[in-house]
Length: 300
Image (tube, rainbow, N blue to C red; front, side, top):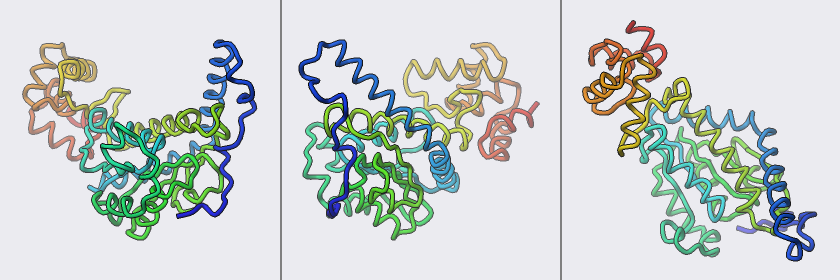
């Protein structure tokens, strides 16, 4: 899939690129940091569409659907980083957040450019994702012209999947093909064309914000605590106990005991530590759609 000569602002020359190789290290680092800060500032203009994308993703997950991710190269890595954190941070099952990364696991150890141009690979990855009508897919491409990502976006729309496109070039094909277009117009890179820098920084921050809002909408964050955290190591078990203690007002010993009764699930443990029976806690959370605030109010 060609880009038909579309002008890629991400490939243009940055004003601080010239003579970079001759500059002392402090000057180089200052230029790089300045470019990163400028890229980050571009996220602010996209807050409204990031909110729209998060609401769409949360709605899909709430009704038992999926929120997938797709990308190649540096953009794919940003998507993958966010996708992999959803289970540990918010307790969202990996089956509900399929990741389509050009080249698959092998490309993580040795990234090659050819896989991002393979439409058959994109089609196979989309088919394997299980995405269907009513689901959402977050498609990332710095230039907005990556063939792998465009193929997935096209297949997704045909399948009734809401396409959220993240690109760093205004008017790019990916944004045009998206139901929700997140434009992060970061412009040229100090290292010409190296979109792992400014473009990727903006993408990663946008995804961080989106996934946190999704977590909030699903009731997986309360008072800034990760109340749906999967406590699968010693650090997280201790964190879970501290969350239960903080939200219930119970001591750490009672918090740990409550977690023991709920199989490590934080939300019901907060209610149990506060004096509710396990059955009452589970019923209250069912009524509140998994949101702990209303459940707490209903059991006190």
